[in-house]
Amino acid sequence: MNMFCYQCQEASKGLGCEVKGVCGKTPEVSALQDLLIYQIKGLSHYTTALRALNIENDTANRFITESLFMTITNANFDHSRFVLRIREGFKLRSQLKAALHEKNVVLPQTELLTWSAITAGEMEEIAEYVGVLATENEDVRSLRELVIYGLKGMAAYLEHASNLGYFDTEIHAFTQRALVATTDDSLTADELTALVLETGKMGVQVMALLDKANTTSYGNPEITKVNLGVRKNPGILISGHDLKDMEELLKQTEGTGVDVYTHSEMLPANYYPAFKKYSHFVGNYGGAWWSQVTDFETFNGVVLFTTNCIVPPRKTATYVDRVYTTGASGFPGFKHIAEGEGKPKDFSGLIQHAQSFASPTEIETGEIVGGFAHAQVFALADKIVDAVKSGAIRKFFVMAGCDGRMKGRSYYTDFATKLPKDTVILTAGCAKYRYNKLPLGDIGGIPRVLDAGQCNDSFSLVMIALKLKEVFELNDINELPIAYNIAWYEQKAVIVLLALLSLGVKNIHLGPTLPAFLSPNVAKVLVDNFGIAPIGSVDEDMKLFLN
Ligand code: FSO
Ligand code: SF4
Image 1: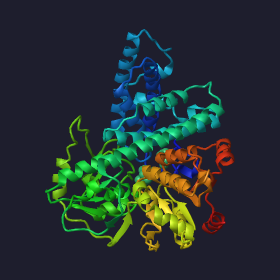
Image 2 (image 1 turned 135 degrees about the vertical axis):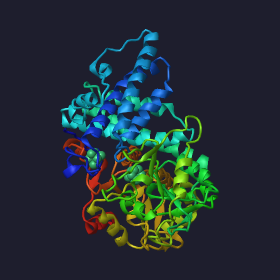
Image 3 (image 1 turned 120 degrees about the vertical axis):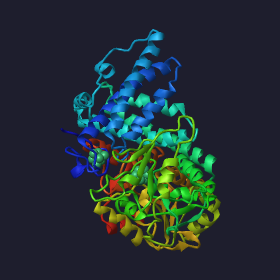
Image 4 (image 1 turned 180 degrees about the horizontal axis):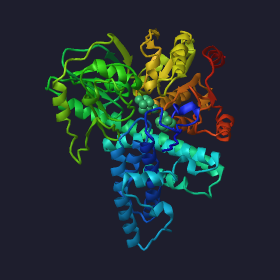
C-alpha cells in the first residue's frame, strides 16, 4: 500500500514518507488520516453554510478540531480509533445536511459531500485518491498543506483552551472556511498566500486564548526551580501539553501514595502556582519527547500521554503495558482513558495500576530554572531594560520550537554553548532540552536561558518582544536586539511560525531543515518577503547573528 506524507521535519529524505512514516505511522493509518482530513473538509462546507444562517453546531466544531489534532505528527497511531471516527463523521454529516435541508438549503452534491465507506478496507481505497498528492500543482499543494498544517497546530491549542472552558467561535469559523478554501480550485496562488498569512493571524488569537485559559485557571507561571531527582514512592509520568489533564491527575492522585512527575512538554506545569501546592508533585523526569524510549524504561511506573509526541516502543520495550493515552493521542497496545462526558476524566484505574510499581530509577539530580512567561518577565522588566541599556545584555536569541532525534540537532546545543556570555536565550517548546541543563550562568541574576513554557507559550515571547519595543520606543519589532533561531518538528511549530510572520517578525532562521512541504516557489515567497533562511554552520550563523 502506498502513502504520502510530508508534514513534519522528519519527512523521509527531506521529501516525504512513501513506504512507512519515519515517525512509525503505517500506510493504513496514513490513509485513514488523509481520509479524515478529506471528511472534515466536506463537513466544513456544511458548517460554513449553516453559519451563514447564524446556526453554530458545537458538535461539529469539536469534531473538526479533534480530528485535526488527531492527525498531528506522533499524536495517534491507532487504526481502530480512526475507523470509528470516520464512521462518526458520517452521522454528523447526515445531521448537518438535515439541518440545512430544514432551511431549504441544498449544497451541490459533489464527491466530497457524498462519498461513503463502512469498512476499513473501503476507507483505505477511497483515501488513495484524496491525499496530499491529489492536488497536482506543487505550489497550490504546498500552500494548501501549509494552511492545513497551521490549522492542525491551531486545533491543538484550541482544544486545550476548550478543555478549560475557553471558546472562540471565530477560530472555528476561520478553520472551517480555510478547510473549504483548500478544496476550491478557483483560488489563485496569491489568494492562498493571503490565506496562509490569515492563518498566522488566527494563530496569534488562539495562543492568546490558550494563554488566558491557562493563566486564569492556574495563575501566572513564576520563577521555579524544578527538581530533576526522584523520591521513593511509585510514580506517574505525565507527558504532552494538556494542563486540564495535569490538574485532574494531581487531584486524583492526592493521598494515594503515588507521586507525579512531568515529561518533555509537561515540564512547564511545574511553573504554575496552582500545581505547586501538591506535595506529591515531585518535578521533571528525563528529557525531550524522543528520549521516552529510555526514560520510560527507567521510570518504572505508569505513563500518561495527554497529546503527542509518541514514539512507537521498540520490540524490546518493557513499558508498553504501563502506558496510557487520553484526548487526541492513541497507540495500539496502550490503554486509552475516555473523555469524562461532562464529568472529570476517571484516572482511578491508572492510579491503582501505578501503585503496583517500584519507584523511578534516578537518572539525574539537581534542578533547572524556568517560569519566564510574560507576567514574570514583565515583573523583571526594569532589571532587563537596565541590563540592555548598560550593555550587560547585548542580544536576545529566540530559540523556541521543537526538539527531535536527528543528529543535526546537536547544532542547537553547540549554538547555545558558543553564544557569548552577554546574550540571553528566550525559549519555549521542547527545543529547550538541547540546552536547558547546560551551565550557561546568569547576567546580574537574570538566567541566560529564560524558559517561557510550552510551544504555545511562544505567545509569551511575542508579548515580551512587544513590551521591549514599547519600552525602547521603537517603530518596528525588527529593530530590537532579538534574533530568531527556531527549531521545528511538527505542525504546532508551523502555527507558531505563521503567527510570528503575521506579527511582522523578519529574518527567522529555521532548522534543522526547511519543511519538505514548501515548494521552491513558495519557499522563495517566504525568503523574499520575510527573510526566512535555513540554518548554516554554528560558526557562520553566530557571525551573521552577532554582526
Ligand atoms: Fe514538542 Fe512534540 Fe510542543 Fe510539538 S513535544 S514537538 S511543536 O509536540 O508541541 O514542543
Ligand atoms: Fe513522515 Fe512526518 Fe508524516 Fe510521519 S508525520 S509520515 S515522519 S512526514
